[in-house]
Image (cartoon, rainbow, N blue to C red; front, side, top):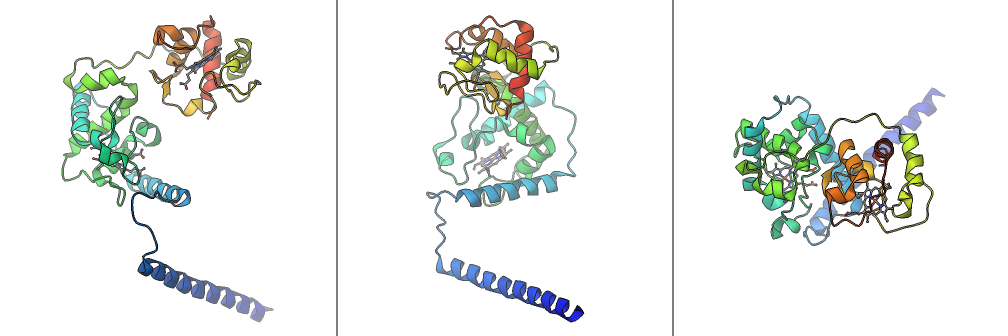
Length: 281
Ligand code: HEC
Ligand code: HEC
């Protein structure tokens, strides 16, 4: 019995070893033959892209775990961060109302906007990314081009970015209107279950596809299936509870040109709807 077990283990080990050697040989031949298309016109395969992105995320998390963030930035350091961002980052990442440069549109992987970066990364992680860069992605390391304090200023500004309208972004570093968009007062706790019923009672589902609220397929308003993950409401306001309640109760007050009608929603009903919509992701 023992002998058979040993034989099985030996066979498995040998198979893994031979498989490993064959795999390495195959990989070497594949590279030597030059079959892989290294050109940036062809995008990565979705599978390769997802795998690389996953690896990048885990690597950043691991390496940034020892970084400690300083105190939150004050108004002056936010403005300094904005100036640094415009000078060094906007060409690749764009900004609210500002497109990326042509060359950055065609980079592989695409640098992408950073308006939602603070949602995906903690401040220490963003600090690490900016300081160290991301190998083979085109994201430069800034360690030798910015001081530590400057990197933290940029990181502070990145956390502030989702709150800025295009107009505010344009003048932010000059300190002309440094005030972020108003977030409204803190609100009562919402009841998501009540909110779900209320959405149906105000006919929200007649224009919006809302998971959990029965309705037919409609394309009048944007679908709200992953609303909880969205950064902005109707492209105008930061997605916060207070702003969502403001939008639901007074859409025309936020954007006079919007096609979303004022449905005369009571404050508490809007609070409950907001609680439900926040769960959708
Ligand atoms: C030459 C172009 C380029 C410049 C300039 C540049 N970046 Fe990047 N950046 C990239 C690329 C490419 C990525 C990788 C995107 C990916 O892998 O999805 C990236 C990724 C990032 C990420 C992680 C993004 C995410 O959403 O996961 C952050 C944060 C970032 N850059 C911040 C900055 C900051 C701050 C500056 C300015 C100091 C800057 N970058 C300048 C090209 C650039
Ligand atoms: C007659 C159609 C209609 C009805 C009814 C309606 N909406 Fe809208 N809604 C819209 C349209 C159109 C937009 C896009 C507005 C814009 O971007 O200016 C919108 C936008 C929104 C947004 C922002 C979506 C996004 O992707 O940013 C939310 C949230 C929203 N509506 C919630 C509601 C709620 C809650 C109700 C019910 C009280 C409701 N809507 C009823 C048409 C409607």
